[in-house]
Length: 270
Ligand SMILES: [Zn+2]
Image (cartoon, rainbow, N blue to C red; front, side):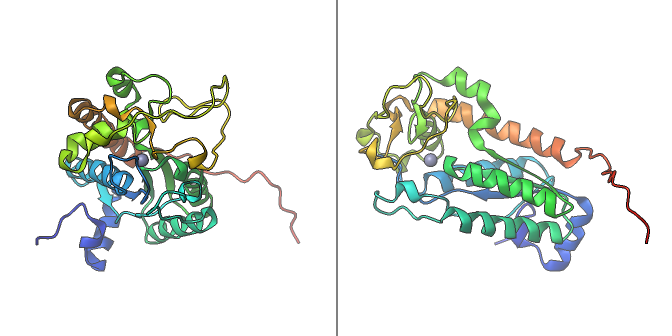
């Protein structure tokens, strides 16, 4: 198998040193091994985020350097479902921060953490901030649907809650990428949280108040959303919009200007 130039770990250490001079955006994908209803495999978050990152790296022609995927996420609230792997939040924060700090240590100055699993986001936000505060690199993080909100709203048929977890959104993109792994005849619509003016769950339209309970208290199938509205056509349009935005993001972020820091303290001389 030939070396693939956008894959970080396909380089020798000396080749990687040469890539530092080019300053590509280093992308760290992270997902999860987690229940996704009766119709999608445990690999859903990993498979979707890796597919998006790999396609963006292919199209970005040398401007993205792609790290291996971190396959596990913060899942304590999903542990009633068989098969889910939980990395406790403190561990995940320190583990991901160790990866970004290693990348910064080697001289890369632009790092993006690309997330496939919603509950990783508050932790990754802290990781990105700490990477900035504790290294010379700029580091940002996003969950993939955020890159293509307009296109997703255009494709969307479900109401509030329909695009949360294993719902219309993830099911559509999975159907586009690997239809043989989706058991649509087993897909069940389930939107089970109590009605509320302030607290709901939706990947595209977040609620003003954040609250996450143990999942089996409000979802019996491991779905939160409407997967019955998933289609490969919607998935293709959404995938293309996300990948296109990701390439534009990488090109912009690679050259993002950064002002000089000023320390305004007056230091008394000895
Ligand atoms: Zn998911």
